Length: 282
Ligand SMILES: Nc1ncnc2c1ncn2[C@@H]1O[C@H](COP(=O)(O)OP(=O)(O)O)[C@@H](O)[C@H]1O
Ligand SMILES: [Mg+2]
Image (cartoon, rainbow, N blue to C red; front, top):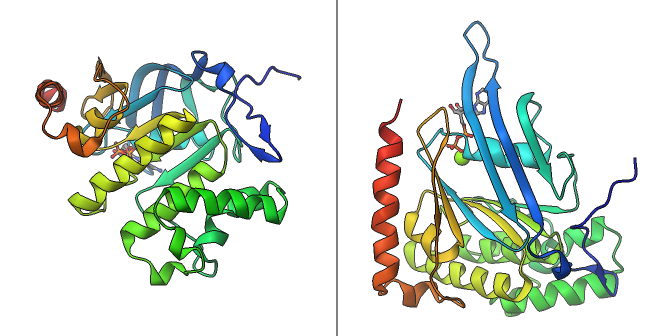
């Protein structure tokens, strides 16, 4: 079947980049999504319960909720890699999830850099798989490593990089892919507070310039408020959406400067209340 692919990235040379003309269209759509896991000799675990969520192209949406409420399950489902049957509808750019979908880049808390590749080799890896010529992919990867503050470490191997530097490299790799949709699962969750703020600002700079659609999972409400256009709050398992809060703070944002902003703290307190309320349900 020949379906339209509204979010397929066009090429900058042979390096893919985001088709900004799709901004405002629906990038991710979940409708009445319910997920149960079969557990041997026990009743199935209801992980996600009737979740509906629509994310526009170019939007930055955070998903917060108590541990075990199904956040990672939703991201895994969107990648098409989770071998689980579900009820409801899940689409990305109007299509069902499929493994290896080039529209998606996935970033996790642990960087999963390839230890035998340099920072440059890691950042360029996705484009290599997509057969972008070496000179072009390396130029693009180098540019992104500069932007994330790793320009002087292109030739370093992961073992010589701190955890913060490795996550910078993973961020460069994620943006280098050119995928219009990013799924990020607590990407800064294992960093110290200061490094985390620095990387959040790096992410904001890159995202402002490139306008990818981001579904960002975090347990850090300050991070969610600082980065997002909307914060979606889930209940304790089985995960349901208890609130969808618009974050109308002006952009561009400096995450570090925002720590002193009154409106930021107001939203933070509001979200805490919603999260606590959702944690008590069921
Ligand atoms: N492969 C699996 N098999 C059985 N249960 C699972 C599996 N993956 C996740 N679960 C269960 O589904 C629920 C949601 O998990 P998860 O999506 O990882 O939560 P979160 O990311 O919000 O912490 C949890 O109760 C977890 O134990
Ligand atoms: Mg998780």
